[in-house]
Image: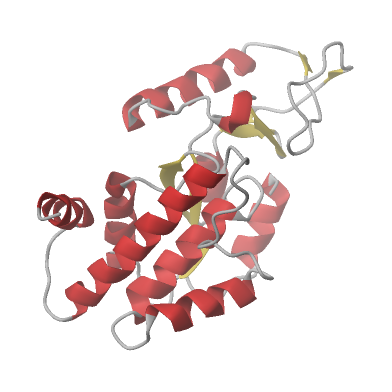
Length: 235
């Protein structure tokens, strides 16, 4: 989504808009053009702390601000490393997504999730806290890189947090599968696919979160990290 699209979304949303950026990988905007830094399997910041990840993104964007032109690759999804010797293109100011959202009058939150992975427990804590402090009537717009894995995951987690106290997990999971045009977060994939273990782990964290919110609905008050730690100790 480019800067113009973000501004249009904010202008046409009834009620407060909060954009939730789910991308751990470094990215930003050159003028209105969204750009990302390439890494194998899109996992360039995997293993970094939140502070280190955001500092690296800031450093990379700052390095662009000192340049008058830039050679970049218009890489499509899963095409491998960028190709060299692309034409030099002029660009506008290098900016963060948060700054564009603020300019458009929208709220912004960043949850750091590695592409193709499920969220870790700490990011789920951030997510729950975010939803608890949303203003009345707020519209939440989740996005990742491709709009599938991470976005679908958090739409399901959002639905669970709001409705798991009154609807079975299977009903909520089916609803989100239909809304995502058949994308099944609980399917593991082919055994030879390198993403299969990641999908399995993602499905496990989603099922654990469903159990967590069911307990929370009847009086639980732990954070997800605390609840998950206690659950693992008893197994």
